[in-house]
Image (cartoon, rainbow, N blue to C red; front, top):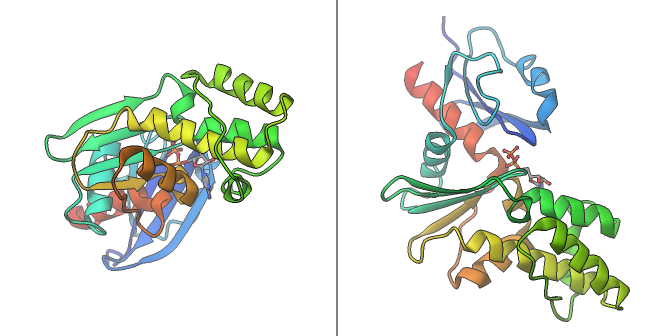
Length: 238
Ligand code: ADP
């Protein structure tokens, strides 16, 4: 007898995500380093259909695959049916999907617009990527970081610190710098939803919202949305 639950896997370039879904709720989920995606398959129960999406989707065993755009659309639809624009901020790329005409703007050449930028900066500042928002929380102002290339932006950060800027103010500046890069990809109107691992960083979402001048909606577990979209697809095809 076929299982009532399905598995959605998002094999991203930085992190691999998995959800078990029954059509109403996420019953289990897992996030692992991208290279550890095989460990997710050990969790699949006999009879469960698996739909995979994400950069490495064809490598992972699957019953069906789905593009990242379709996975994001299906995943977001469960939370915000009226969404018009999805900003998916991952580790190696940022995608902006306009659901009204299904166009895609993508930044995958320059890490200044992705989570990798904050990861590098956090490492330099001696905090975890999760701790970066907390560090910025007490900032009195945000240090200006203007370079559009992450290598130059990081050296701007280092020279600001050498000139006496506070770590908190630099951390605040890093969020704003990333927000500026991402905002360049976003259309000027529309109801926007932010997803991807970087959308777990509330300060980042606020910086982006300030930059765009509009409020952003964020699902409860933004990093799992594409895996959930894949699971929804598997359920419809089961
Ligand atoms: P991909 O699908 O491209 O592999 P994800 O959407 O899984 O990427 O996002 C991975 C990125 O999210 C990484 O750069 C990671 O540092 C960042 N990230 C994950 N959790 C958090 C968090 N709690 N706060 C800030 N950044 C986070």
